[in-house]
Length: 285
Image (cartoon, rainbow, N blue to C red; front, side):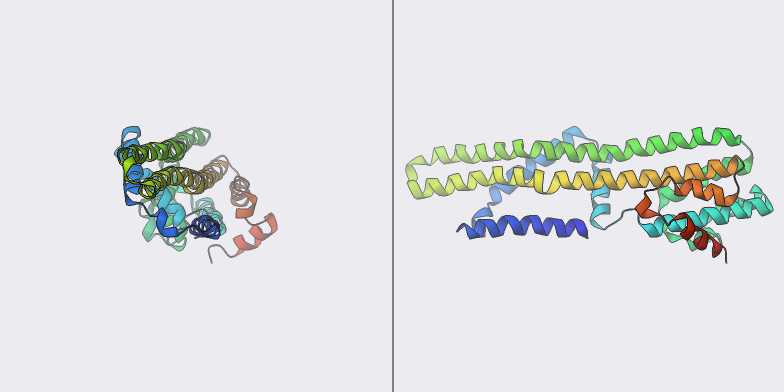
């Protein structure tokens, strides 16, 4: 929602200033320049990326538009879930977690925490970290290396959408110039049509440059920064899961293992140590 508000402010600020100078908003609506710039941008994206990359970009942008970032509720639920899992394993052994991990959406523990069970990547990462421990196929000190591979792979996948978005942002001013040059070429062809017609054609051509620069610095680059920040928080979330699981697997008691996970997250997303203690008192009840 905040991103959309920012878009509105950018558009409103530019239009109000333009109108104060005596401009008419209708003169900025030049379909040919929109088509030229849009086509050039889309073609560049197709050349520079793959269908999976474009799909990932659309998903990343839609996520931030919907406000799909890591929130304090997400982290609190994660810490509570980890605490319940660790307590269950300590009381009844790791084997007690098997049914919960095999079908987490029907689990009496997992089903209470929708910010995790509703996110396929988060849920899969946690369950895949628990499965080898439950099966005894891995030593506790080997778990972090295994999970780190997934974290790195996920970071690489997320970074592809950022790189593509940044490429679009860096290219848009140049593509806007190309769209404008196409308009100027048309203007040269009608130069004998009178000053009024030539002036109108030049103004239409310059709209391409405006759209390219405005699109880059007013929309695409700020969106890329937002997506990058969102991805960094998601990566922190994964690291918190990894560190919490590894700490418990190596012998930390449930509270300390959860504390390790808490310290991996941005301070504005997590409760204080005292607040966490109060939150964990109600976990599992």
